Length: 158
Length: 386
Image (tube, rainbow over all chains, first blue to last red):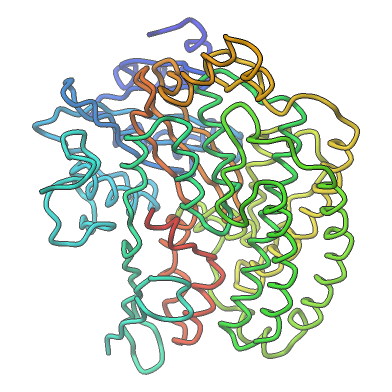
């Protein structure tokens, strides 16, 4: 849902001016802004958001996935950004199809993404291309399946 | 030489394993291995109603259960578009600040043990016990309180609650002086912490460090100031920072934060004492009615029954609520699909992220310094592994 308020958000305006194609949708909910970014534009958008002096989202707070199974595109990967200098937050969202859950890694922009991406790989099976060390982090190395996917039973595999 | 430190090692405060590559006594590479305490809390949340999840949040960070309660409740309240009444908000502030004090006391004590100063531990746990007694008095539980509920508090605090808090707060500043007498100018303590485990402010931001880890490196970022929640804007306090970025700086920040928290608790006590009012907001069908109403009105009984059997259903949407836990930026991402169970709950655990920078702190130092580095990141393995 695109509201008029979202368009007034200076961060969204900046992003649109920079590259209109990098913003496919803007969601406003409970005072939080979510910018949906196409997968192909994620790396560029991340680098721009982190370095542009006006935006300066230098702190990546969290990366987390939501599995919308059986709806396609199945996965939503959320990046929670924080600008300490401007006291502002922004959520980037990338939608991924269930048969090809791959994303470029953002570890080169935010080194902290390393463990976050490993966690998402471990629990959701999202593959981050260009990640320096993509291994399971919470589950044992020989674990099969991705526990936080919706088609994975709560009580565990048989 | 490659050495396994942990998973059973007294100074890792739980089950953390660090693979150390050594050149003599010098650490060449350090790699934390985690997951030994993974209990799938986030998956369990998806099978519970919104209120049931509160009991799980206690168990994430077992040294600061009330902070977790608060973060989760605020997230669900944001999802619902509700706010707790002012009096409940102030009591929440009071209790979470007590939690911060208790957590930092545990930290000072255990960290001192790690570095060879046994007696501090005995003192800090004596004071922590007094705070635990307050929690027990208020909620019936020392640790797994589940005292904060969506929309307010579980119960009216019992009479005499504020007097008990006042007694502890009056004694505490003197006790902190005692710890500082034992540590701050102690040459062994200085030798073990000064110049050890240095991380610069920019590196700390890049590595996503938060809380005392970040403030010890000179970045004055505190969620309570930057994004006030639960009426923190009504309180006067300073964000404590140090610029050295070493283990000693983080120690100084934590001790100073205990003193700041005492200030906040005192202000909260004043505010709560002067106030009268409900401890839970009113929202029929979402927030349980008072005991009185449940027993005397038919609507009250129906709502009570429905809320405790079916739960309540927030509108579809996603929120990310961040609070300042004793360890740093604690975030709760809650996604709703419009049903009575959360579709997804993600905990942004500060110790998980802080631990990631351990190799940065430890490489190039002695093995003994790794203990100091692990100590000052203040990890709680329950939170790291969730």
